[in-house]
Image 1 (cartoon, rainbow, N blue to C red):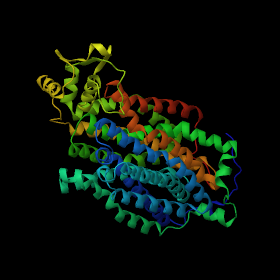
Image 2: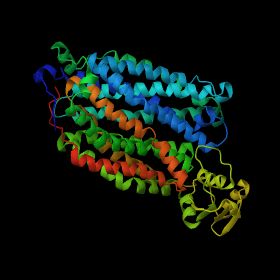
Image 3: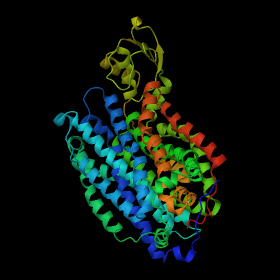
Image 4: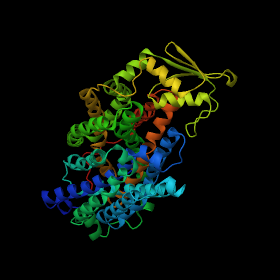
Length: 533
């Protein structure tokens, strides 16, 4: 691999002064990052409320997918934030850059809790929401690269994977914190009040977390590597031009993007966000049960990120990350099938014993518009009830014929379809979920994620030279996360609806994880022993 010229620096000049400073760097960077991810995850967890509150009434499926697409719009801004704040981190310092991003994120999140609804201001409601999502995405795009670089530059050599893995758990902890706060608010104010106004509480209370995070980060010193570069006049004045102006560095960015980041992204979001969406919207598990399963699973699985980071210090970063990608490609779909059987066995048993077939015209079906024809309404009905079906395209003149087991229905009338399902033995909600089995699936998916994500911060920092490190690692990381991860809930949901199969959307993360594992095996270098000064 081509390399950029690096100036050697005496190890003593950049080593942490003592373990106390290293611990403060970890705590401060992680606390701020937890807060930012908490803010960002609130939207994803509450997307089902936003679909009814900020978008035009009508098709519930289209409104939900629009809310997920808005969630993805925030991710689309992350590469821009990576460029802007990554360059600032290389020019003015890691510390100052991620202090700015934290304030932007906190203010934007607080403002979401004050937004008017569609019924109050019409189309301005989704416009305001999208603008705040874009600001959040911009801030998160700049946060992670600066924090990862900062912590890694404080870490002792030989323990870099372990030290940076504490930062890696911040996203999972932020997700966990968002679930706990949402659950507490829903239980406290009641379900009806939460739907009307209580959903605003987690956003508004985030201002307190912002104050705490800012206070902690104000205690930080600049990273020793950046201080040394600044004192010696080696800090880059044009980090973007320097990062993209040399083929060796561009090649490293491409390796990071296609050999690690893309696969890590889809595995992470499948295990976290889509797993929760799948439980609540497809398997129709109530929010208390689904939040309990995920909360326990996250508590048990989060330490695996630190364990994998420490393991990478011993066996190397590459082999652990590639193994996690390969395992994900082979086990994501079986994991979700297992999750289905553990959380709603009645639904799975009904689907296996009672095949559903819809014969109708497919020409008018769209996931973005309100179902108008009887064929569209029938397809939308079954997906809303978590049921897969076989669709047979037929001439429009033949009408719609649906079979539920041995029952035959012509046309579409929702009341008649519901009665037919009940008569066939269908139960909308699970009766006796297997908590132990469901939690074990969540922990397994977190274990695969930890194998990739735990060593990743150390790997990225070790891959790039210090003077343009923040810029170089931030962009490919957020390109993968923004373009592939941000739209994962939307794409997977759309594929499942379009194909009439609740597991169809999972081929998206499976294929990407598999391709990334192959590319990574061929081109990703081992970086464990790199001198990052």
